Length: 529
Image (cartoon, rainbow, N blue to C red; front, side, top):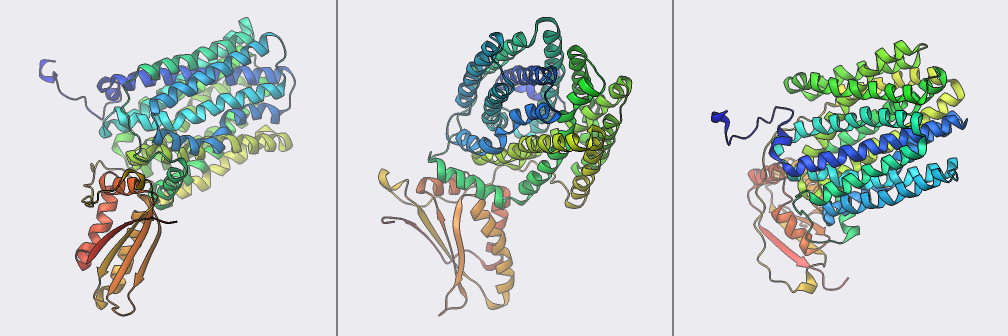
């Protein structure tokens, strides 16, 4: 031990992020409590719906109510998390969730909790989760070094699935012994715990120089639209979660209705699912470290498809209990890869906004999928719905196989551009900036130059530029004028100083290597308009 004193933990080891950051430990503890609360709430709501004899579609709507806010509110939440303190977003949203939880508990206690009201209050708690998600996930790379992010992503999956083990088990047992009202009250304590954990965590402040919401929203969209690896990741994520949502939307129907299990037994059903996820994540960690991302996901996806088929065809509890751990392990293995890739592909200045698109794809996919599979089960039966969902994994698997997941390497930060020598008054800092770059291109290099500038166009846009255009001089055909607009001078200074990734530096460097340095670079700030 003496030789290891003061040395940094090995990034390849699963628990290393917990050792290097007290703030990460606090956030993970709070997240575990809140995730457990969500599962206690979900189980209690689903049991209440089934006991009241609601339709399969209404039971599936409980999951939609939890995840539907991700479709509507996650992107604005990501913008908010990049503009203000991520820590305070976590504190305020979880405090609001406590208030909603109290209303839910009291409504149940006085017996005024209708199915409609239960879905509305569940939706509001899902809204708090949707606002939390970008802030929490964007804060993780702020409190742990980049080399620990893959392990942190796997720990986040274990955290989520530990909640899936503890939450349903607690929910089922509490409902069986004390009723759903106590379960609703218990879930409220989880949100309170996360609010306190976020309050005490030492999360660095990373806010934008300009705090205007709409320009920040546009900038986040442009970054995602022009970051091809991340955009591809979002598409695959949406397809994966729409397909996999059949497991969580229809499992209560299989357990409680098809197999006639009780609330306590259903809690253990979900505990088996989550337990398999935890054990599977730990057991698969060495394999994940050895193989390329594409190979890893294309091996695991067919296993999940087969497990869906097994659950749909399970006519006895014993078969269900055998298949559930496999389903949990394979589902979580893919989810951990997707989230870790999202965190690593996004630069810090736009990470929360980018992750908002990831969460919209994942949790929005869960909500849309719950509606889809609930409707299919209502019309054709649960077994058919699970069979169709298993077959639907195949296109996602083929897309992953052919499109290839990006393999993230730790390349460090790219050097920023030299800052322009400008002394502007305060009232001009929030005005739109116009940038022009003049290039001299020999005729024999024209086609190569235009090809290289296509990547430069994407670079300017993903770092905040818009209205990008490349024009040629009609009098001097070898002169090309590149121009773009940035939402404010503040934003353009960030474009110079902190928004350049290694890929952006490579795009600009390729043009300079081809035709040399620009003839002239000019900056303008709008005075009228």
